[in-house]
Length: 506
Length: 83
Image (tube, rainbow over all chains, first blue to last red; front, side, top):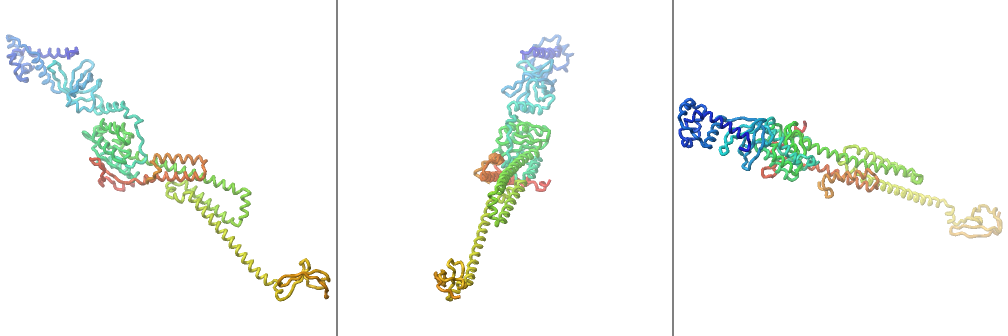
């Protein structure tokens, strides 16, 4: 106390004031020793301004002076102060704030011209939502008292609140600053939401509107989502700790890939749990990405800053999960469409090459030779083209349609089917040709038999002979055409022989 | 659906993207293209199947951290779905 000059001034002032009263009251103090033994409330009696100075003065003129001990004086001063200043409110700036290991807070309250020592005992410090820091303007409520051993007077604060900002707001700003400095809000710490959470964790109160809102959104837009609730109180003393505990429980559940921490709207006090440091730390340490959806659009809590993603409301938090899923499937569908487009482009290029080859003279010639198969070729080409067209039109449809019809859709199967048809047509053609050849052979046999019947040679069987010229080019029908000495050839039923004409009968 | 050749979504998507790029570059033999296409369809089917595999269910974590079925009051009636 004595290290500060104005402390002495103050003490001096205080001391100076007090004696003004006792001047006339000295006479009322019977014995020094007697004063010491009096209870404190009685001791102050003679010093009360309401005492009877008049009588004191008259009586005191002849009374010996009373000498107080320092302790007596201080005790007197204390009683005086404590009784006259029951509860005061004082406004000032905090300086030299220190918390001792006893938990008590010591500081000085000052304004531009003056200052006063202040103490706040641990029992009261406990209820402070903010941290009293140097430079902070506060309004303090307390009682003025004297610390006898040092002869110092001070204000014993029962309550402190930041001036300007409410104390909750102050606490919010302080924690925000502290956690930001630790890097807990860094964008680099934010994890992406899973595309398709196996289970969606929800941490909120079982009977709040927040839970119903979340379930409603998920049921509508993510109908088969698997939800896991970790119920907790979301307001009141200790709620921050309970929410933190609920998060720690749910992050251990197998398959919970994202957690929504939510609470409906309310006042700053109602939302306070979400501004508690214990919760912020658990959110930061959580294994699973967390979406915060606390209060309304305009409410920002510490939990929002630490969370991987902040949603303005509980429903919006659910929407974020849904949107991530939808985006993911949109992405898959787009890739699927590109996949189809790429393969069909490839197949069409092959088709074009095939057409070019078909148009080449060598191939065209071959085609001419198999003109008889032309109809089949046309059919095959048409069915090939139809397959292609089907593929192309399907490409433009939704991918899930493709997925469902995958088996028919697989070009490999389709090619196999075409190949099978080609082979079976080939076999049919061969069969036709074979049948025709067989029929021709049969007919030939029949014709041969008929020709056989008509043959003049058959007459030979009856003993006739056919006479040819020597070259066997002409049948001799008139003997007059022959001359003696000419060679002829004679055919019998069995065999033939050469002969020479010796005589012609005309 | 479990497929030993597919690790997870991220792997499936990454592979699918690679396949599409290869096909779009288009310098592959037909047989190889078809092979890739088949794999691509398999991958995208895997992704879709995971969505369908999810179960419409609500569970609740109790004080001991165990999962229990949630009270039926939490399963909102379906008319909400129509909104």
